[in-house]
Length: 395
Image (tube, rainbow, N blue to C red; front, side, top):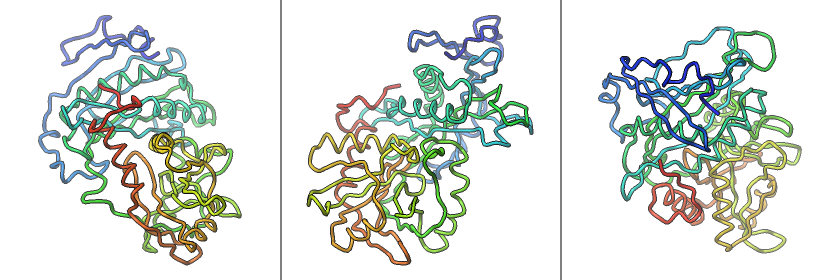
């Protein structure tokens, strides 16, 4: 549980003269006592760009959540404080050994009444815990419900930063870094878990914009036994060079392959789906790579698409590894119906072309299934349709 270090708990000798608040909320039968220090400077909010001009990840709201962990006291009291730079030792192990992981999630204002919601935050908490455990970070067994409650409170504090309207949201970036001042290669004795937030606009400004991809890269994103199934910082830096090469060649993203048979794993930083007619069965089939090998990120959007598609019971939904030769042949046979990437930022991103071995494979875009997935998931997120699965969590 967070806040077990009672020497810092807000109710014990807390100085109320510093524009602070004390909040208490119950989560999973634990009392979490957190401090809130509200900013008194409205300059950043008043100077924020119009919502139509928001660019992803460049505008940040007024506050952030910070929770320290140390080997003696474990999780300290959660603090909501004004957005600020971090003070780190140059010896902090996160800077030297990549001991950092993060999540990406969103808070929404629903269309009917502008109430606040999170979309399946329990999945993000599970994945954050798994990423921490993979990096041998202590504290990975944190109480997930308590962290969700802390994030809810952060969203309430910065509610005015959430733009209204479909496609607009507050992007949330929970992050864990090792702050241990130690150059040795070992599990850290100090951590910082923090959450920053950023208002964002629609991924597609005007209708879907299908992407062109290249699979002609000798770089590999992930492999069995690696960290591809976790959101650790080290997964993303090495993708920047192949991404730049793809851009130079006229393509927006890279289709990541693995193995001598050119097995398809992911696209860019998204999961990938193919909707095709199976050559053997003659049946329509939605295919995405499985999680069994440990090199595929268990995306929240990915899981949601699979659950929705299976509930429709209109075509086969299969988790298996497609290969580029298979996709090429399906396109030649006119059995490749559509394809899309899936992730938190875009929900779905239609794919119109994949370059493979120097040849462009054209794919129909934007397909009806891609549109349907988009409509259903965003419909739930903004409460435009009934949430029968209980995915939207009210704040």
